[in-house]
Image 1 (cartoon, rainbow, N blue to C red):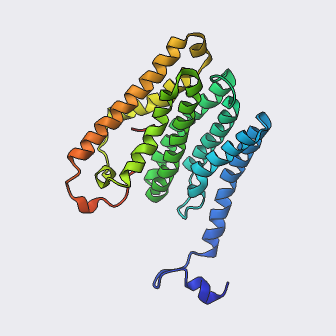
Image 2: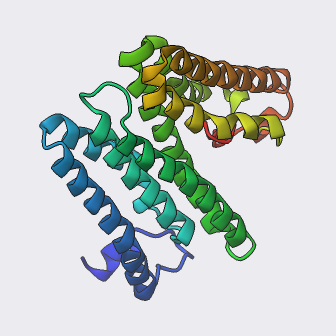
Image 3: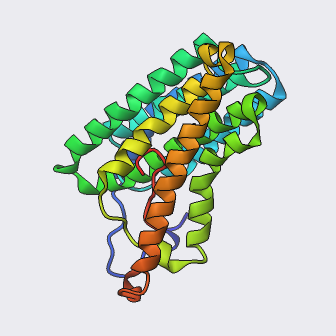
Length: 264
């Protein structure tokens, strides 16, 4: 590409990104790419079918595609989030075509839930030194969290019915409505109750498909029902708040705020 062509990609008065910065970004992306590649290979070995391989590739693309291409710095919390996404790919391979979640799948998912708390702590520690990186990573974390809840919820459908998919679909439904309803783009105030509901989702949905739930179906139904009820209440409460405050300062509403289904 000629020098004039390269210059045309950047607004007048803005410096072009240094070559060293581009190389650094490429190097920092090598680890997450390696993690996802290993997870994809593992999923394919565990269940070498076109369906599983296709699902794994799709989940990886949805979860990490935009974040891997972002221009903002890549931090340690992002690497942990990538490990969580890789574990989700393996978990998906373990449950597709089966009934419920076996102990191997439960162990993989539980590790992912633990790492969710770890990457949050790492991100909070990094916020003071690099707020921009943390803000960019929040969108990545949100994307992976939404996929975790979706996969867990869909995995329960063969066991307890279609209604179990609702916890995984609520987030995407909410984000879809924000495209048509600007009032829902307003940042939500902090809420301890929202955090409690968020922390319970993965645990409840995982428990609902675990071997004990298969042995005692009432346990599975109760756990899935509790997850849906709590999440529905949290979303409903926040939507009511957004509607009440929707008319205030409409000019400030420009883009949807992240609403993490695990940090409601």
